[in-house]
Every structure is written in structure tokens, then in C-alpha cells.
Image (cartoon, rainbow, N blue to C red; front, side, top):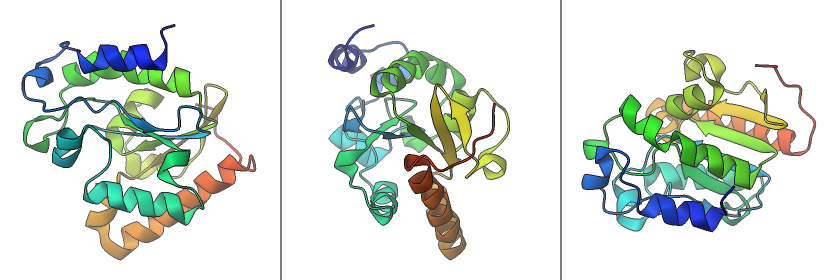
Length: 190
């Protein structure tokens, strides 16, 4: 297995799909490479593409607030996306783009080896749980995953679109994340 830095170097020069033609920056991931808590989102947006950092726009500010709401900082967690390059006009990633990046995110998860892995939205949840069931049915339900726990939650953009009700759901899901980090949670076997 290559090191996380070697994996980053590979990702920064990746040309496995057409997104490499339109990206400004590869958004590999950031945070603590020894984190107990890892977040995996869908794909970079415009701000992420400009900075090369995950979740730095409006959704990122909400994610940061939710992380801080359970007593952690962004520096204590690891944040990444399934797809490492921004799809044009923030469209949903094509299946071929998800497939091209799937080995990279799988290797990142293996390297970080979090006790709690949180999928942000449909794409990450469906890929990592290998399911067609949508996030609204799965959100907040801890699942046994690679010796730890995977908790699907709404993407911060979806939380923001839902307004106050979305924020209540998100806070409830993040409380489940906090409890899972303490090791006090029952999980569903996939």
C-alpha cells in the first residue's frame, strides 16, 4: 500500500476521467491523517476547486459549525470527497467519474482508518455502502463498516436547503456521531 502522501501525489496528476480537463485544482482532502472521525462528501464545488481544499464554501462553513457543535475542530477530523475534481457547473458526478476516483477514496479511508466514517449525502453513501437506497432513508443510522462505524448524513447543502428542519436533523445526526466516537452506539450490520 502506498503512503497517503504518495496517494496525494498520484491524485494531483490523475487523468483518469475528463474532469482533469476542466479542474483548477485537485481537492484531495485535508485534516488529521490519524483522525478517529472522517467525512466523505460528493465532489468539490467552485470554492473548493479554487483553493484545493474540501468544504470551504457555504456548505463547508455549515459542516465546520456542525463539527464544532460536537466539540471538535476541523483540524481534529479528516475531510475528503468521493470525486477529487469539480464537475462543470457543479453538476452531479457521472458514474464514470465516481468509478475513476473510487480507488483513491478507498485508499484514503484505508490510510486514515477512522473509527467513525461519515458520508455526506447520496453519492458517498451509495458508493461506500454499495446500495441504491437514498440518503433520506439511511441518514443517521449507524452501520458496521470495516471494523468501525459508518453514519450517513445529509450533505450540508441539503441541510441548508431544508432550513430550520434540516438543521434539527443534522444536529441529531451529529449527536449520533459524537456518541459513536464515545463507543456507545448500536450499529446495523450491512
